[in-house]
Image 1: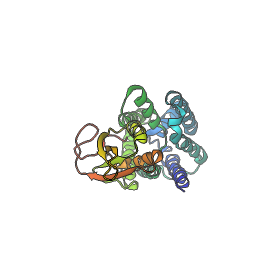
Image 2: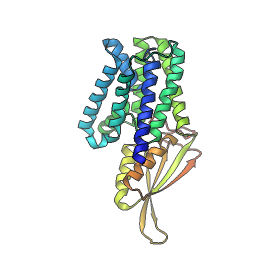
Image 3: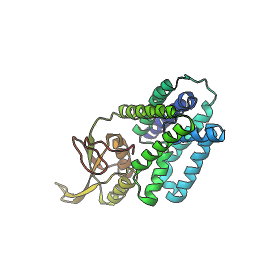
Length: 284
C-alpha cells in the first residue's frame, strides 16, 4: 500500500507540474527556475520544442549522475525525472489557459507548488537541478541548497535576457508562490524541527551517512543507554526544515523500520544553514 501511495503521489504531482508548465508558464515564457525553466529558454534559443529539450537534458543528467554517483543513489530520482518530460510531451498542444503573463505566473506557480508539495510529501523528488546538486556535493562538497538556489537564480536571469526583464519579474513572482504553496501542501510552519533518532548500531552509520549526503543536514551523535537492557545506543540529533520531515522519516524507516524517532519543535535556531527565525536557507 505504501508503494501504491508513493507512485500515485508521484504521478499526480508530476502531472500537475507538467500541466502548469504546458498550459501556463511555457506559452507565456515564464522561466521560474528548475529544469523546465531552463528547457524553455534553451528551446527558444535553438528553436526546438521544449519537450524535446527537456527530454534531452533529463536523460543527459541521469546518465552523467549515474556515472559519477552510481545508479543506486539515483533510484528515487529516475521515475520522477522521466515523468515530467513524458507528461510535457503528452500534454503538448493542449489549449493555453491564459495569455496574461501575470495570471500565468500566479497560477503556474500555484500549480507547480501543489505538484511539488504532493511529490515531496510522499518522499519522492523530481530530479532536475536536484541531480546537479547531488553531483556537486559529491565532487566539490557544495551544499545542495546553495546549488539549487544559484541555478534557479541563473535561470530567471537568463529568462530576463532571452525574453525580457519583465518576464524575469513574473518568474520571480511564480517562484515565490511555488515556495509558499509547497509549504502549505506539506503542512510546514515557521521554525525548525529537532529529530532524535535511536537505531541499532548496525544501521547507525548508514542513517547518518544518508542524512549528511541526501538531506544535506548536519547531525550530532549523543551516547545513551537503554533503561531496561543497559545496552549502549547512539542517539542522532538533527535540526532540519519542516519541509524535510517526511523525507527524513521515509529515509530512516527504509533503512531501519524499527528505529525510534522523536520529533519536536525548535522555536529558535542559530548557526550555519539557518537564519534567526530557524528557517533553513535555500530550497534544499
